[in-house]
Length: 189
Image 1 (spheres, rainbow, N blue to C red):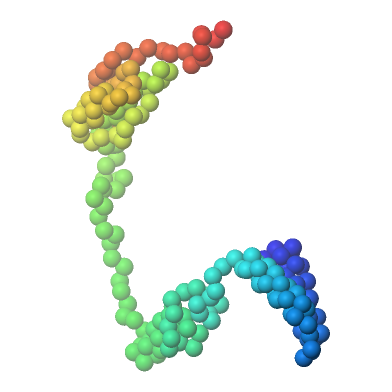
Image 2 (image 1 turned 90 degrees about the vertical axis):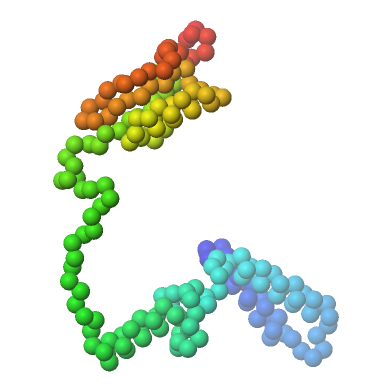
């Protein structure tokens, strides 16, 4: 709640307090309608000021967390932690789990493979320079099929090439003719 909202809400609630002190058994209906309008205005200000959902628990750490009706603060997360602590009192601490070796990676680790992996990079000529036009492939045939599909697309580039990457780069094949295109209209006049 920002300062302006806080000030407006405080003013509206003080006005309602004054209305409450002035109420008597013979208060006219016009005055009651005025109280009703002021009460609605205060509720609207309060609705604008509230930014979060109403808390579902009485827990200050997890106000909108899952609810456990049996917990004193209704918080399932804190109650689970308390239950684990009570269990540890009765059963003793959890048994020691020795640290195991890290699982082998599907792709290996850097020390296993000091050279970069072999990849084929599909590139297109954008009129100024070669740019990557798809994800690098591990299979040359798959990369060539990708470029063939790109060449059949409705908005194909004027040229494509396949670059082999393994420690260094080597252009394997070029489709089309790359022509440098001036990006300024009418030739920089």
